[in-house]
Length: 117
Picture 1: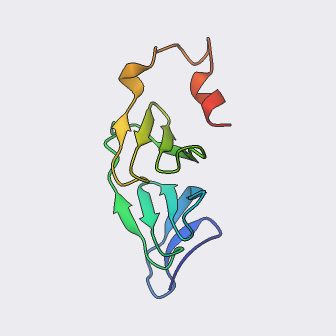
Picture 2: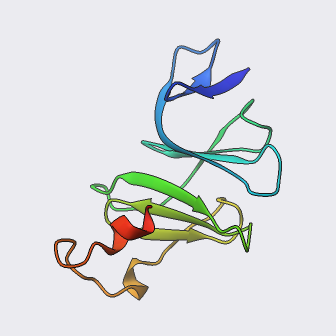
């Protein structure tokens, strides 16, 4: 059985565990979860099994917060330390929206911080 508790993700029988920083539950589909740590993982069975999802962020970029769009439950936003990503298929594939956003220094206007709340 795989678990996502106390800030770790992995199998009880495995020695490998990965720290998780954010866990998002699908607003309508029971058992669909996304977990963010050093990598992004998805579960379709309530956390019993997990598969890694690829997010093509810069090597010095850190994954951060996940937000499901309650009005459009297939849409998920992923905030990283340098980018904003969008998935239109429940977290299977991701598009970097950073180029579409006006880049404003964080000290001037905390856009990404406001999105993470």
